[in-house]
Length: 104
Image (cartoon, rainbow, N blue to C red; front, top):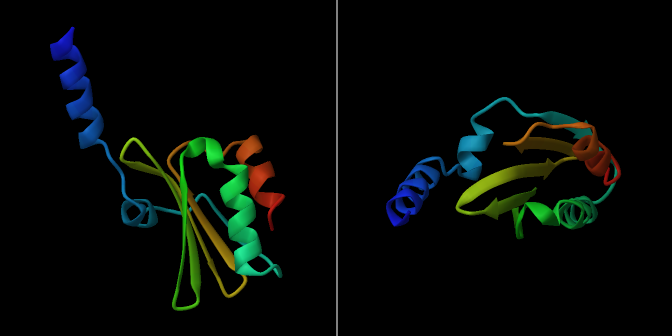
């Protein structure tokens, strides 16, 4: 049993995804907004808190929200110049879309 848990942990760690790896893939959605980046970021962070703790960074005119759980970034959102770009490991289903669209 212990060996199975160790093996599972090694496999899971090998599957860890970073925000940069998510951004190297096709975005799940792109939106535009007139809302302030801090408002959008705060709303998204609150709406998707079940994905894990949200990290919000503001750098060089870009606000980034990432959700990390178990060493894997589950979702990354960049807000820059009224454009919102979203990457997500899980499918971008109707519920996730509704939550994001409620924030923009």
